[in-house]
Image (cartoon, rainbow, N blue to C red; front, top):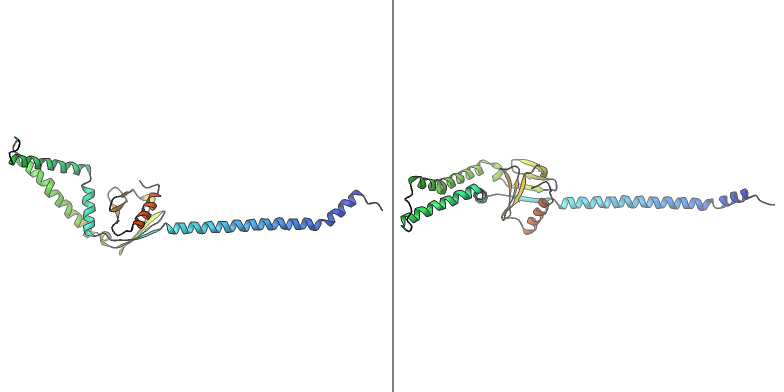
Length: 218
């Protein structure tokens, strides 16, 4: 009996249908494994990012004493150009007065106004600054309290004995690092003070990395 070509093709397809089914199952298994691998990889990356985010949170306890507060405020005050100019002017007046009384140079006699100016710059002004700083320190609970600070990637959290606040880094005016301080300015006048005195070198480096990674800070 002679079979037609169509009959041969049909028999071939029937005999090899199991092979096609197995190939389909194999392809499906490969796709399932690929999807599973993708999900596992995605979860792993997400967990690693979460760990990195947690590791970038810096926790600190900060206590600023009156002595530290006086030192930093006097340093900031007398580093301004106008204050430097006044100090230089007072020194010139003092040299003038001393040289006149020693008759070293033929200088004109200082008038009462020069003595008053020297007194204002050298005595009255520092006294007023000192009393203002002391009064400001003892009138503010925030300055005298021990603060728990959390420095995260997007914000700084500060918890005191009587207050709690969160500030986004995008709202920070600027950050200044000095030899003994980190100064985080909320505006041109007020700053969050972090003394380096009680920090380890590792903590200082970590704070520098966090603050340095924030592009919105000046």
